[in-house]
Structures are given as structure tokens and as C-alpha cells.
Length: 328
Image (cartoon, rainbow, N blue to C red; front, side, top):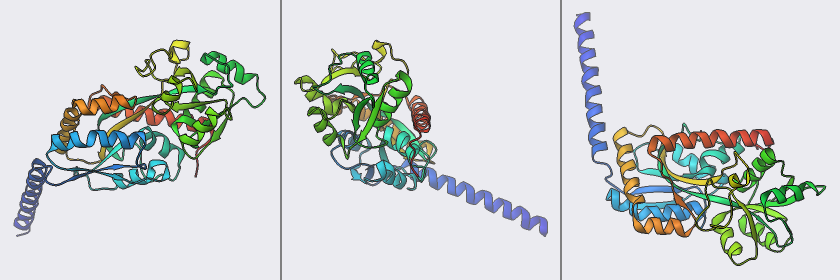
């Protein structure tokens, strides 16, 4: 009898497991059956938000369901990211993440409640937006090397603003200090707008800024760009050389955006999202909107993008550790 009870129990468990597997497969096969939410971990109006709103309608078309953008700002991007990391991995809660959410913010904040790589499924890359090293009207440097030389001639170095401590603009400045000997005092602001305003008024010496926000001032001559941080020159500023072209290696920096889901996503749901994102990125309107904000499409398949996300997380964690600027 004991043998029969054991045998029956094993058969029952096997049947239950098979039933659960089939139910999960059937549910995934019907995905998506209701609207999908894309969380943006920042306030409306920024680069990540603009990217999410550019891709949203095309994703909706590819998936056959409404896509809703949900802004959950705060904590440098960690509040919205934590919400997604803890969400049910069913494909209905996604995130347009970025260098901030999946690299710099969790490295800056020791108390971040998620792992920038392990807590997510990287669906695919969307865009990169390079930064640019810009100088104030009073600053005479016309090349990056001149900027470094002039900064070293000042007792406190150059004053260089950023949208805030831990922003990619700030961390790129720290990386330049570590790699090139740039002498600079970091001046944090509450957003890029106030920092740019002081730079235009020569209250700052220089700044690393996203190309999309500085380009209008560079084009009308109110600011001078001495270098781009991307691997290649952006079509937005074709006459401004990159740091690499000026002999600076290891400082290729661009803000990336990508589509993420919580870790543990069913494989077939994951593949549907990968396919839908690929279709969305082929949309002419999406490409036009990305180009208008100075962004370029990421040309990587899903595995390559996942490796890139992990590499960026390690890279910026090391910059932050070396600079000693992580916060509790």
C-alpha cells in the first residue's frame, strides 16, 4: 500500500506539473491580451520620456494592444526601476530604462533595492545620445587638450556644472578627470537648465552636457563645443571632433535607452517583445523622432545589448568607486 500511495503521489505531481506548464504556455501564447504599461523612471520632458513616447505608438501597433506611458520619477530613477523590478514578470509591465536606471543610479545609491542587471530582462536597445564638452563664452579653449591645459593652470581647476551629483554629465566629468588629468571642481545643479544658464553667462567654465540640449546653443554660437563623447561624430554636429579623434581613449560615452522587463519573463513572451521592438524601430516616425533629439538607433541584437548593459553597469560602478562619491 505504501508503494501504491507513493506511486500515486508521484503520478499526481507529474500531472499537476504538466497541467501548470500547459496553462503557462497557453497564457503566454495569448500574450498580449490587455494594455501594456511602460514605466519611465523620470518626469515628463526628458530624453528617456521622449524616447518612450516615440516608441510607444509603434510598439502598440506591433503588439496589437494599447501601450500606456507611466512616469514614476524620483530617486534618480530608482523608484520607477524598483517598481518594475518587483512587478510580475508577465510582459504587462515594462520599462524604458537608460544608463541612469541600469548603471549609474544603483551604483551611486548603496541602498538601491534592485540589481541593475540581474533584476531585469533586457529586451533590446533603442537609442544612444552622445554628450558634448562645451565651454562658456569666456573660455578660450578650442580643443579638448587646450581645455585640459587651461584647467591645470587654475588653482581650483575649471568650474564644471552638471544637472546633479551622480548624473551621467557629472560622472563623465569624473571619468575625464581620471583618464586625462582634467582639473575641475564639480558644481551640481538641480537640472540641466540652470547649469546651462550659468554656463551661457560665463558663471561656469565648462560642462559635459547631452548633445540634444546643448546643440541649439552651439549652433547659434553662444557656446563652443570642444569635443563629442560618442565613438563617432553625431550628424547633429558634424564639425565637432570626438575625444577619440583628439587622442583620448576609453572615454566613449553615450546615454543609452532600452526596453526592459522584470527578470523571469517567459521565454516566448520575451521573444514576442523582442520582435515587436524590432518592428517598432523600423517605423519611419520613430526614426524621425529619435533623430530630432540627436539620438541614434542601437544596432545590436538582444544578446549583444544585454552584454552592453552589463558592461556599462560595471564601468560606471568602477568610476563611482574610484571617485569615492557613492551615497548611502
